Image (cartoon, rainbow, N blue to C red):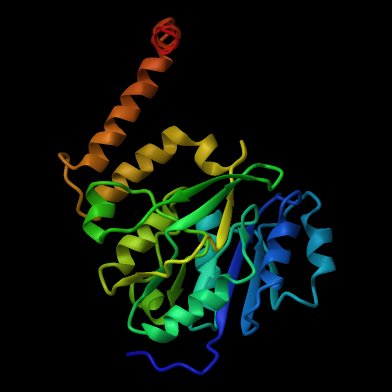
Length: 272
């Protein structure tokens, strides 16, 4: 069992690149936390938009601002993990938000279950590009096996991990572009248990056309399939079969006229 101080240090990492239109809202959401023993690290991959000016505005309130080239978001997050001093560590992307009581709630549960390695909340708000509320999602984590073989959806914003467990699993594969959170959770669940803090939403995920999950679906599917197999998924598992179906759809759409025909066919049946 981990022994921690009365008020454990929590590290929050924000990786960013050219998201100047959103990052100030993200920074403010971290600085507004009701829990105060926070180490905040922002890692900017040399943004060329307005990000730098915004970071300068909050230079005295952010513990560390790292501006240097990296090999992508995963590389930046692992870099932040390794320099973090907190007992609990998590990341929030520069277009998402933490609600003001997020860390307070996570730490309260951590104090009660210090043997767990992964703390998350199954409820999260989906936000529009302008930050307005769109809908509530509920994605409970059933087990590692369920995540691996049945359904890969998870809620990363607002999730935190113990430093000791991160070191034990060697973080995650920094070459991953889309599935680093899934890789990390599968690794962590091999060495310890998770806790759903069972709260109202503690984070908001901004859904807009620039998010990686909306711009790189084919690459995402191929990466995820390979990752799942590495972690032990079988060709008969629902997760693998779902990916195969989506890949087939992509290939069909790529065939001239066939993709157009399929679209017309689907629209026809939707309207009858």
